Length: 162
Image (cartoon, rainbow, N blue to C red; front, side, top):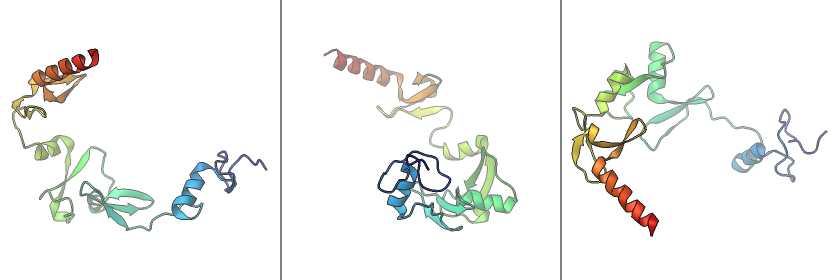
């Protein structure tokens, strides 16, 4: 048996910790869980994410609860570009009558209601301007208007030249 290979059955990675003769992956599991094996959470357990969405653990995978509820209701897996919209905008209200499936093109206008008709707010001067007045980087527009971006670039060049 090669002493430079992890001693866990089926693992072919090089030894990371010579005391335990295991690879880095199994050593990290031992540090985290107290055992070299992978501990799976039981089905149905979940968490509340920082952004307010509830996740649930199903068949070895973490899923968003509102998507899982809709998939069970429809009896099929949702496509990647199918969004599940909360009608009352409460991310923790996952009642079936509060959820609806819609394509991305219909979902986006529900949440981008701050400015209509292509208006945006500059993150620097806070002016509301048409989107075409914003600095373009590649094919995307940044959050700053062209005058603010030019002033920033000028100040940056002066700082670098000193």
